[in-house]
Each structure stands twice: as C-alpha cells, then as structure tokens.
Image 1 (tube, rainbow, N blue to C red):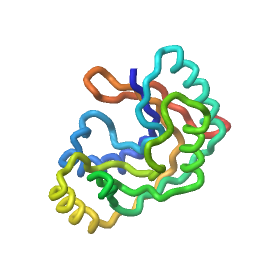
Image 2: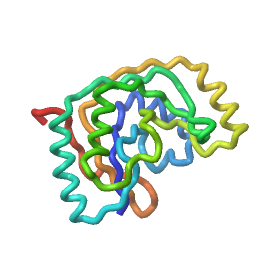
Image 3: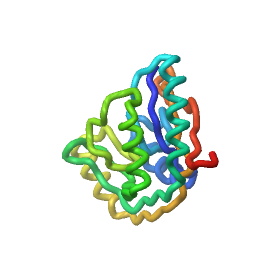
Image 4: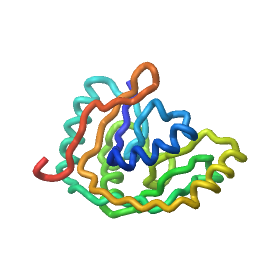
Amino acid sequence: MNYGIVIFPSKKLQDQANSYRKRYDPHYALITPHLTLKNSFEANDEQIQQLSQRLQNISKQHEPFSLKVSKISSFQPVNNVIYLKVEPSDALDDLHKTMHGQDLLGDQPEYSFVPHITIAQGLSNDEHSDVYGSLRMLGISHEEIIDRFHLLYQLENGSWTVYETFRLGKDS
C-alpha cells in the first residue's frame, strides 16, 4: 500500500487553495490541499506499525510552529506546477530533515525541499504562462500555527485519506 506524510493547513487556507485547484489541479478530488513532508512510499502492515511508533517519537521532539504563506510561485522550467509559497523556517526544515534522516521508509527526496501547497499542475506551457501570469498578481498573506502532521494512505481509487495523526510537542 502507498503512504505519505503531510501537513494539512487550516480550513481557511485550504478553501483559498481549493478555489484555484478545482480549476487547475487534476488531483483536486484525490487529496486535500497539503504540504508534503514525505512523498509517497510503499509499506506493509508491519512496517507501518513500526513507522507509526517512530512518527510518534518524532512528533514529541518537535514543537508547534508558525506557517507563513506569502506569495504564489512556480517550479517552471522544471515542471509546470504553480503553488502557494510557504516561507522556509528552521522548525519546518528540521521536521522535514527528521522525516528523511531517521531511516524511515521510502527514498530520499528527488528534489530539494521547497515548502509549498500546490494549486495548479498538469498544465501545458501556454496554460501555465496564462494562469501563473494572472495568479501571481494576487496578494496573499497568511499565517497560522501548525501543531500536527498526518500519515496518509492511498485508496484503490487513487484518493488519499488519513491513517494516523501526530500532534507536535512534548505534551502531545
């Protein structure tokens, strides 16, 4: 089965992201707007039980942190993905590094960590240029406290759902 580890932002930010995703993201119906901490990986039931224990320990080592979204950006020319740019922070970077430095299941990331929430993907070059040109003019400023992350699993229809939630902080 496929699994992944993500942060879900507040409903307010999800609604804002979805206002674009429903038009520009073919994965709109498969997963809620999210920030990926660990990309999709395969695991069996025994591996997931062990991973769950490790994630519980990781969650206790990291405190809640502020997540700031400041603009709309793009990964072009690498790919035609448009996203809400999450400002890098030491806390978020440390959490991401921990997810990849604990010999957890899955490979090392293919790309450098650029915290983001995807709002458009699978666009042709012309579509990307038009959509990005109009969206980047929009002002966006959002800040919230993140106090949890989620282990997801993929259903047979390709959609993702929460397997387990982990609260950040020693008292969680």
